[in-house]
Image (tube, rainbow, N blue to C red; front, side, top):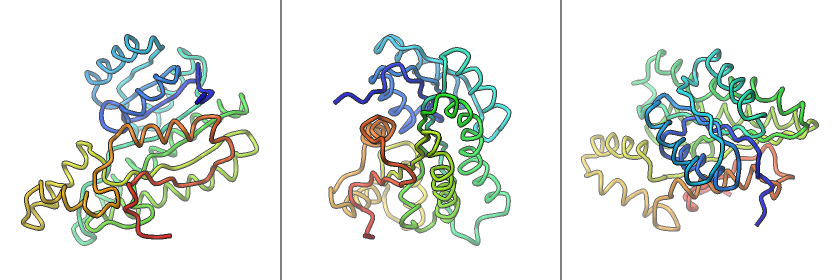
Length: 262
């Protein structure tokens, strides 16, 4: 299936590992030029070299703190200068720590807002003017199933990621006239380092082994398994493609059916 993405420029945040890395790989496989950022410069450079070698694509890689608005500005401007545009922007960041409401300090809330909400704002502010010039653009946020179904002990994620959905809907409504589609992808329990951290926390809280925690998550999904990062990545590529040209303002769950609502 032709996605219509060849030679588009895709920005993927937090792409040194996990879902972000798989997403960068998936866009490169479609013939996109890719701009990748994360805090781990060594991992970024390793990924950049592999993408160039495997897919023959142009890659801009830069260590960026996505909570720093000025750093995001410099990264997007460098991407446009080097690769020619900013057609697609996938916002992404590590999730906030697992904890209950009374355990969360005001500083925890501020950090969660900076990392998981304002980072999306920073990228949107930078890429939308470039997309308006071309009258074509795709902004896709990566959040979590928590935007539809709160998860116990993830109060920070439950609250802050819901704000991202409000942002997505607002941007979709305001900039649809400019040919910009804005959507959100909510992964369920996906086999990443982040999930390993959550399993460790849940294991300590419940007195179960981490293996039992993983098995419980898998058993709760109709597909009876965890998701793979590539499965989330392929959904993101589809939303960015011409095959999804009439979809905007939506949250697409990639959760193996674990969401219990209608």
